[in-house]
Image 1 (cartoon, rainbow, N blue to C red):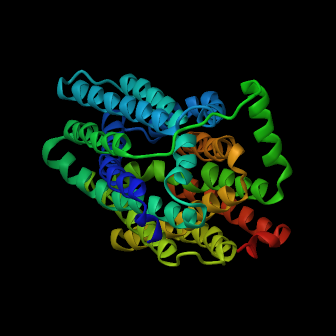
Image 2 (image 1 turned 90 degrees about the vertical axis):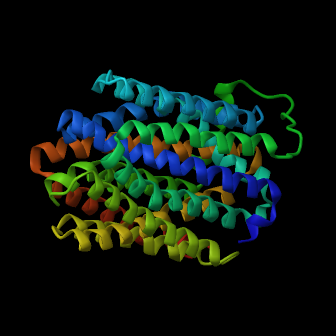
Length: 398
């Protein structure tokens, strides 16, 4: 766990893990709350779609900003905005004023904050650790994210069942204080803007050209695009799945989400424990095949204990894809373009997932939830096969 030797990273780690716990409580409770209000899998997809619209509008430009201004400042602004939105959601729910359209508006605003936060957060890693410890730091970032993913949904399910969704949203609002305080306490090198900058449009074009011309980055971004659009979209259906397929309730939803998070945490800890290992390409290839296979098996299962096991495997293999893709892209990216390249990566991840959410929701309404998950898994497996055949150099990447 070499990244934890850096004081700034330790502050980030503990602040983020508290904040992410609250984020996952809100995310899990909100999904079930939307389904409880609307009884519609399609509306679950619509909320995810609304959260993604700002990603397409702002994220590439946000990458330019992340290369121009202090990233800590940008992160503090976006974290504060998310905290205010969590308290607003809690207040509307406590007062029994909440309507589905309110949730769509809040999702749109959360998506805007996330669009500016994601490139800065991705590029901020190298301000806290040295380059040789970047893969370890990314793995630890994922470990803290997925610790929260494992614990937050289960806590949300119990809190929702006993106290109601508003308390989940309130806890999330309070949790942002930890990461905002951690950012303020960091002692970073002074930010020195690059002299003689071109226009934002020219800088954005420079980043896009670099990604288009780099075969390995281009392939990784393509893999993330398929996984986000077709593979991971099934997560949107879990609240409805827990009721319609497994005949459970809010607690079932929380446990399913936590099982996926526990698998993701196991993968993140595995990567972190390997240190400065040199077989990232092979591990990425394994994850790209394992994820669609395990997810397809989940679609065929109707027994809750086995569903939990398969979601654990799905979460594990998914994090192998996302962590190692992130680390490899940052390895290939020059520092002066890092914010823009990571904004393209983040746009692919965050921007396509809402389209996938909308698509899987509509497909589930038309053909049933299991069929929707199986279709996405099949397309993801085809993409993994194509990359293994046509880009074998990626598999050999250290």
